[in-house]
Amino acid sequence: MVSKLPQIFTGSRICIICEGDEEYEYLEKLISLDIWSREYRFQLENAEGNGNIPARYQNEYQNSSSDIVLVFCDTDKKPYEQYADIKRKINEFHGMENAADQIIIYGNPCTMQIIIEHWDDVVLSSHKKKRNAPIIFELTGVDGYKGRADQRQELFSRITKENYQEMRERIKKMPSDDTVEGSTNFDRFLKYFTTDDTKWIQTINQVLDG
Image (tube, rainbow, N blue to C red):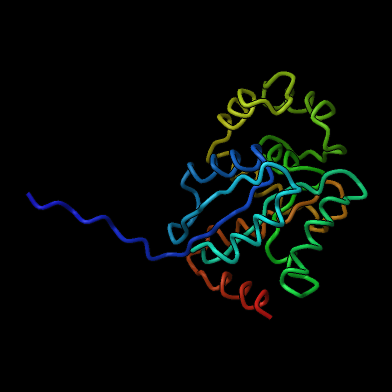
């Protein structure tokens, strides 16, 4: 009996540095839906806190075998000091002003702003889970959301291919200015992830390389 050799992946490898469990598990769920181009293989890294993102990014950029390294994080609360610090350190690492804008996926005020769009067109006014819990309960039935592991599992189990498409349509209409509440640039990256044309990776890397 002839054993089949494993198929060699010839597409592009995308590493995404996730701020924490919520970002990591949300992307993990989307990847499991098999809704993105087969041209990409995703590697998720959990930074376990936004303060760890710059160092993780630099390490992955310099040492990983990925074709591109992205970051997925909150803007958090005004005046967005931690978020601004992440952007500044990435810009300094690349020696240019707009490097971070090329590779950061964000939700303002928080990643839940993106996630909640699977169920309704809502603008969150706070990153605080206590403030957002009643909205999450009303739309998903997940009670008293505090971001616990069991609650995240319950929430993400409700994400489907159908409401993913609804989320995509909703976020297309959202502002992409990261200083505006209820904004995200996720739509830009979803367009990248669903196209078989990988030139966007080369384009971003050319900008980062100066």
